[in-house]
Length: 264
Image 1: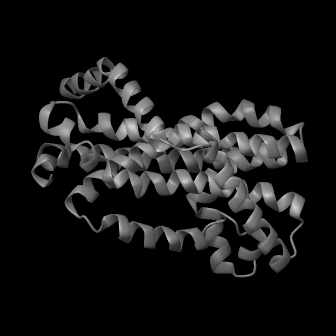
Image 2 (image 1 turned 135 degrees about the vertical axis):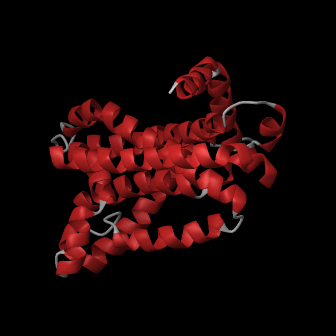
Image 3 (image 1 turned 180 degrees about the vertical axis):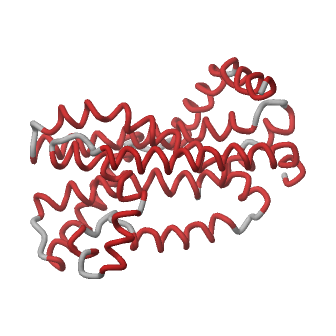
């Protein structure tokens, strides 16, 4: 227990270094770009427009209601995939620091997860703008619920980035395999498909109700799209899912951290 306290005390001591890594990481994402950080919400808005028009025609959805639904799904999914795919190269990306400095590896996975979460928060401006256009009164509820949601998402991203980074440094094919697995999850989760489609099949609807991604999405959809706070069930599912991820990340880090340098 004393060792754990010392470990995380060192993490807190390095908070300015972590902040520096996050700042540099955000700047490097848009280096030499004309629009820079604007791409963070321009890209999901364009993708939302394309998917919204196509699927609203295919499934006979009301475009006004469907566009915010798709956008919220894309924003969360971008954070989800970055944590497992881009996050898997964290240790390799910081190999020069890891070789020279005796810092906890979770310091680097934390910095990358904060970059992903910060990008998500910036992209949420797009959803806020869309909420103002469609249902401006919902914005206050959305902003009130956002801090807790952001904390849950940040812990999830840190856990996912930590797990994937240790797997990725040992198995270099992991990013490609993870992309394929996440593509399957994309179609089995309500990222852009609405609940009525899952209700047509009892097995799919059961999966829909127990799928933690459904409840993680509800943390932003219910406030911004429906004007009420997420349910207790949504919070319980999300917190339990994130807690399991955090415990798994702690276990993987404890077992793999000392040997990670040998795979660089």
